[in-house]
Image 1 (tube, rainbow, N blue to C red):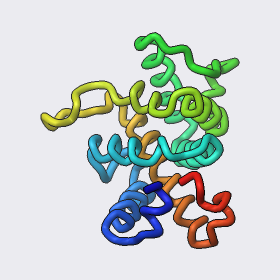
Image 2 (cartoon, rainbow, N blue to C red):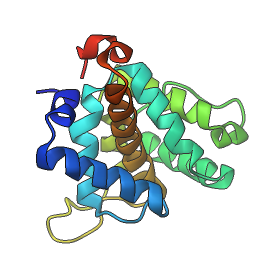
Image 3 (cartoon, rainbow, N blue to C red):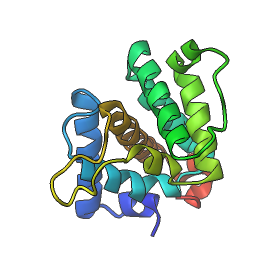
Image 4 (tube, rainbow, N blue to C red):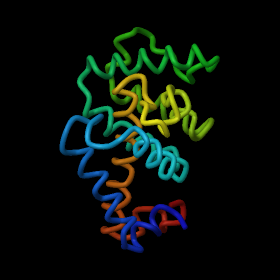
Length: 173
């Protein structure tokens, strides 16, 4: 069952996802949910997204951050990738390029296209969360993953309400 099917099917899962979206939109994008919930939602939703929907959701998420926060996130992502031996698919021509939500969205979208789940692996450092520890070494990493998941759900639910035609027949979710 895809994401769209679980959303249209209603029930507890749809309510839980809507609650997640609401919490994301109400406060700071890194508050209102546990690290484990963010990772679970991201892992549940992101792999089902085609690159264009992922990138659109990422851009909306990054637009919620200030330019300074986007810069910090971009630098953190770059450091995490380097420390884990991964070369980012796009390198900024200047550090200020990290301030642009479109640049970050395109970069993370390419990462998703090349290796779904990689962003979560790079950003979800720390403990497993089972001992109550933090999964994220940076709250902006948590905000990015929560944002992609929440905006994707919001976009899918909005398009589903408008008819499946906007989702390419609903076949990919």
